[in-house]
Image (cartoon, rainbow over all chains, first blue to last red; front, side):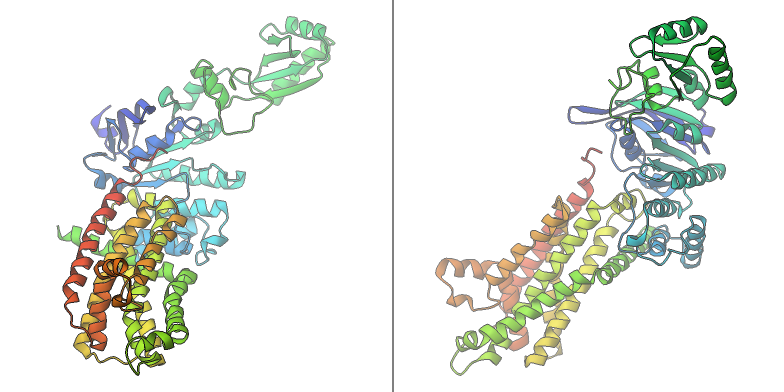
Length: 330
Length: 266
């Protein structure tokens, strides 16, 4: 950690926090370089939100040292607050005001001044496609619009460091894409971002570095490609109607792993059309009939399965997919 | 130092404007808080007033009771208005926006100051409405401008004390529903005071309670200022109660505000 590069980002070392007997964060360290995006990836209850609340001065840690934008979180909280923006999991908007009034409130509290404040409000309304709804009551806003307004409010003071706690949870796919685009644009503008997510694809899409958090500990940390290197890769699952077909297929494909109970053969494969065509041709020429085929790409279950050795962790907040590997759900 | 002070003032002003806007956007609460004392005024003057007025002395009636009850109803207006304060504070604390404020470099006290000043303005406006209605019904005051000013100052000070108490109750409440119920005790205290009938007419135990609880000296002071009558010995009691409640409630509210969320698992 060099003082120069880390001074404007987020550096946390040995952060611990417990509520009574329950240890929520156990010696968590992070180093988010200036102008990069880092993701805290983990299931509900892993400690992601607690970490964000500590770094954004909302709650104190029991121990550990933390610097955000070059300021100590404990001894210089107001300087930290002046440099950060936080968008929490629950919408932090004023429901009795309009969208424009909410932004104006932030501009006033950031002491932007009358003219500069008005300009910034109009700019953000346009950037977040809220100009048409600017003077409407928030009761008429959709979930996606509220989330966009929430983030716009965070950006009024042009913070250099932004915390986003599960920024896309509960959004429809289109709003999710919009949010991703906005986050990328922010990082391109030199803003340091720490976001939390339950979705591997989100971390993969956005983050320069990912820290996997499980039961309050960082169990894996690295660039997305490094992490994915530790996960069993994509594969296809071939379903057979007959044990003898399964046997013949596993003789034909020695790299594959058979599951005799379910009559399934798991074949390493990247899932592209070309590779599937080659695989199916091979099976066809050997006269092996495949009943059904499913393509499986790695997801959070796999990351957890890989980095926690399978002890983890339950309650991933998502639909169990038929392709999830056995063991990760235990 | 001067910028700190300027920011504190500016932040408090922003929060005050926010709360006044809330009152306009949520007119049902505002109208109810202003309307209840007016309805009770009409009820007490036209339904009970004839009989209660006769009890004030020989040849007295509804008109005399109107003069008697207006100071009490001004205090009831305070008791009514602070319910709105508790509800608004609790709504703020249970919503997500308070976390946003806490992660911003704004004066710590500004959120509460905004609530307190907003409620004070609302309460004074409600009292003005009540006085206007009372005059329309035939209320006559013997007070000159100075007495009026003194009465308003006493009422404003007492309102400030109860508003800080309501802020603390709103902060202590786990839900908005609880926050809307706790200030109801103020309503009850109002009825157990000299607001509606003279304490001398009450049974002994109740009378002693009524004479020493905060609403009675404040009511008596305002009554003495507006309609003459009893001396203003009560003013010291009124001031002592107001300042005492204000200080204790203020310290309690600040303590609750600073502690809130700190011990809350996420």
